[in-house]
Structure formats: structure tokens, C-alpha cells
Image (cartoon, rainbow over all chains, first blue to last red; front, side):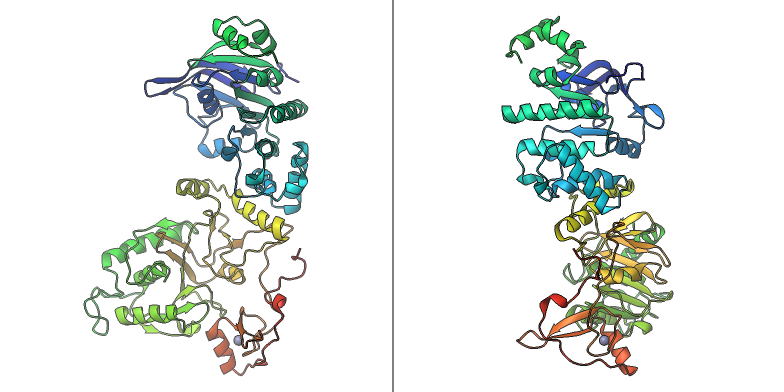
Length: 261
Length: 312
Ligand SMILES: [Zn+2]
């Protein structure tokens, strides 16, 4: 499902982000191919969240480029785009699943409206079709359709994350960013959510960048893994290789400090 | 609107400038108004002045009217369709005193109509201006409280969220339930709050020959719809925009076309349906039209019924 004969979907080159004199992330480069899932792990302060914001169009980097292979014009530097173009990209061909559902959902409108919003944003004007799409996607993320008109506020944390996923996938994006998508959830809820994400991502061939502190998450989801520390990538390779035979002393420490998944 | 004197004329209240506002303020408001006319539906900020009336009494509309009114003008003020409510009487009296202008209750005789809650039933003409009093000018505010974000949404035409609001109404009630301040798109560009008029009046805004000006005093915004400009009420293909209709006709003038108010006539809940536009109703009666004059027995669910096909 990863097609390396195609052009990379996302190409990040020499990306740095500083906050005043502080380093957020430093000199990060990687390529992401269609259908590929990249895990980014590190502790808090490692720069992984800064990196995610930079590559997801939310935070302009201090240096370096983020290039996305757009459907119409081919590879484009996302920060050289006009703001309307970038915002349009972010709500059509991209998705972002936030750790905190409040950032990713509209809490004051129903689950169905949350899913339908992206369709309406790109011009859908047939209520029946929008409703039908909302039903489809809530089914795909295994949510109770009886809750379609309820506010996200009334949902459990796991259900809110499912709703975020449905809301993002309804426009069939090719690239989805996930920031600690399962953290804060009960272990059994986490496991079911991860299964669901893995199933959908593989089935739909979506490329993902998953940022997490949880090696269990990346072992289950990601093909490749980047380990970050102090803003820099200290190790980068196939997930199984990195986790089973870590080369960098910091990765060795990370791996040894968790229970086997 | 020509010939505005710089000093109060002898008939007007001593010690105040013509139409109360000082000339510098009026010039500032006129500049904002011109910009608003040039960008139909776009909310132009202006430096709203303190007025001798509390917010909620139409201070935005009053400032717009004060800036465009001249000695030759004839002013009509309506509130809930009527010329004789406290609010309408006060505003009319305010301009009679501070500008010495003629006032009227007749739509056809007015050159400027300041309004809250209604557009007159009688079609407006190219030589008239209608000034709306606006409590909340931002149609996106209900879902997006951040001003910076709503500005960006307007700038980038990111209006999907308006349909999210309509979606919610259909999901919960089977139909679009918004009856007042029903959002419109002006000239295929800006989404605009038409002020709390009933959606019944929305079609009157579309390609209206008269200039339409909107003033929000507390929120310090002016916006406009130039004459003959497209104004479209938002809807879905399968839930098209519709206006209210009544089974009853006006009990006084028999009109089948006007927006009807329901008046409770006794303690058993009998109701009389009469035109909300009192000048329209009076003009029809003067011309010989008659209604049944009869109240309708209590029957709470048959008031403003939606046309068939739109109900759930
Ligand atoms: Zn009548």
C-alpha cells in the first residue's frame, strides 16, 4: 500500500523552528509516501509537537520547507501558498486529529453537523446527501447512529476521538496528522481506537504522521519511525527495526523503559 | 439629502447641531457608508458616538439617518411594522426636534425610512432609502465568537459554517426553523445578517430599487445593499428557502399578502389577525378594502404555518 514509485506526498527539508533563542525543532528532513504511516516519538519537550504544527500548516518554520504533492499543481511549498489555498488544503486533502477533542470538534453542534461541516465548507448544499455521508462515516468509525444529533459534549473521550476521525475523513483526505490520538483514554478504549485507526488508514490508503510519546501506538500503526530528542531526530528507520534493534543510546533507553507490546 | 445646513435651523432644538451629530462625525459616518455601498454586504467599522438614547433603541440606525438626512427629507420610522410604538415615536420626535424635518407615517411619502423588525409591504422606490437598526451585525457570531476569526472567514468566503447552522435546524426539527434575521448572501459574496426582520421580508431585499443601509451602534458597524443588488437567502437544494404564510387574511383590510400579527382579543384566547404594517393596512382600508373583522377561536397550532412540503 506504500507506493515508493510515486512522488512523495510530503517532503520536509531542513526544517527548523526556534522560539526566540530556544530550539523547537532543528534541521528535520523526511519524505512521506502515499499510504505510508510515519510515527514520531519523543518525550515532552523533544520537539515532536512543534514539528507536527510546522508540517501541518499551523506554525510557519524559521527555516526549511514543507512541500505537499497537491492534486492539481503537483508539489507545492505549503508556506508559499496563499492563506486561502492553504486553508482549503487543510480542510479537504488533509486532516488533523488533535489530542484534545475540543480543538478538533465543534462542541456546540451535533455529531452529524461535525461530520458534515467539511462537506458544506466545500460547497455541498443537499441536506439529504450531507446527512447520508454523516451516517456513513459515523458507521465506519463504529459510532451509535442514535447519537448522530447529540452534542459531542455528551460523548466519552473515545467517542469524541472517533468523531474527530469521521469529521476529518469525510472529504477523503490523502494525508492525516494525528497528535497523541489515544492519550488520556482507558487502555481498552485505546486498543479499540488504535485498531479502528489502523483498519481505516490501511483500507483507505491514507498517509499519516502520528506524533506520540507511546511506543505501543507507533508499533501498531506506523511503518517508519522517527525518534526525537532536544528538537533533533536522533534515529529514523523502519518501525520494527528501530524498536527491536535501536542504534542510538537514547532510543535504547526509550525502548527499554517500556513493557513489550 | 442635499443642502444640509451646518448650524441648527431656527425651528430645531437650540444648542444642537443639525440632526444632533456634529459635522465631523457625520462626515466620518458618510465615509463608512460610502465604503459599505461600494462593498455590498461588507461590515465597515465606524466610530460610533454616544447618543441620547440607550443601545437597543436603534442608536446605529439613528446615526446613519442623522448622517444622510437633509432639510428636504421626509422621515418615516417604523418599529414592529407600526409607526406609533414608543421607539418609533421617540426617534421621529428626535429628528423633528434636532433636524426640523417633516415626518410621515405613509411609506409612499417618505424619502428615508428608519426601521426595526420590518420592511414595509409597499414596494420601495429608487428615490427612497431604508435604514435598518441592527443589534448584531455579525451573522457568523452564533458559531464563532472570535472577531479575528470571523473577519478571516468573511475575507476568505469560508461560509460553510452558515449551512451547519441550517443543517442543525433540519436535523432537530425536520425543517429550517429560523424565522427572523435569516442569513443572506449579498451579490454572491458576503454573508449578511438582515437584522431581526421576519424571513417574510427577505425577498423584498432582493434587487430592491431603494438603497438599504444597516447601522449597528453597539457593535460599531455599518453595511449596505446598493439598489438592484442580488440578495439570496441561504438554504439547501432539498430544503429550499420559504416564507411564512397564513391561513387567515387580515381582519381589518382583508389582505392575503401581508405579514400578519396575531392579537389576542379575549381571555379565552380568541385571536385577531391583522397586518403588521399599519400604514399598509390603513391605506388599504382607506381605499375601500375590508376584512371580516372577526376574531379566530383559539387554536394554537395554526398560526404561521409552513407551506406544505417543508414540514417534517
Ligand atoms: Zn390589513
